[in-house]
Length: 148
Image (tube, rainbow, N blue to C red; front, side, top):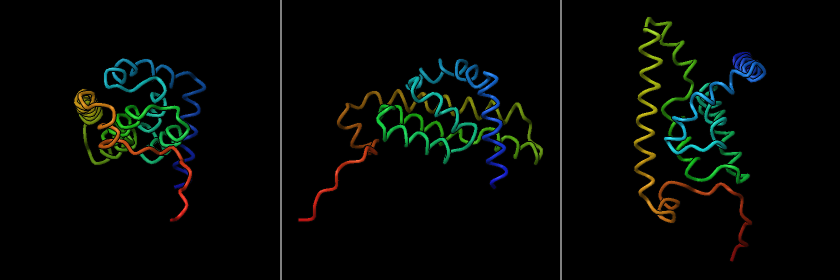
C-alpha cells in the first residue's frame, strides 16, 4: 500500500512541477465554479478526485479547520468527492475487467458533475443558519467546556 500511495504522490508532484495540475484546475474551474466550489477548494478537490476520498477529504478537513475553506465549499467538495473519488484508480480497475475507457471515464465524470450541480443549486435555496444545522458541522476546534 505504501508503494502505491508513494507512486501516486510522486506522480501528483510531477504533474505539479510540469504545470499539468494547474492546467487541469483551469480546465475544471468553470465547472467547479458552477457547482459552487470556490478557488480555495479547487486544488483540494482535484487532489481528492485523483488520489482518493480519504486523502483529499483529509486535506479538505484540515483546511476547513484552519478556516481557509467556507462551509458550503466543504459540503459541495465532499459531495463531489463522494461521487468522483479515485477517478484514475477506479477507471483503471474497470479497464482491467474489460470496460471501455471512454464510456467509464466520461460517463462517471458527467454524472458526478451534473448531480453535484443539482445538489449545489438546491442547497443554495437553504438559508445560512438552517444550512449549517442540516449540512455542516463545524470542524473548527473550540475550547472544551468544564464539566458541571
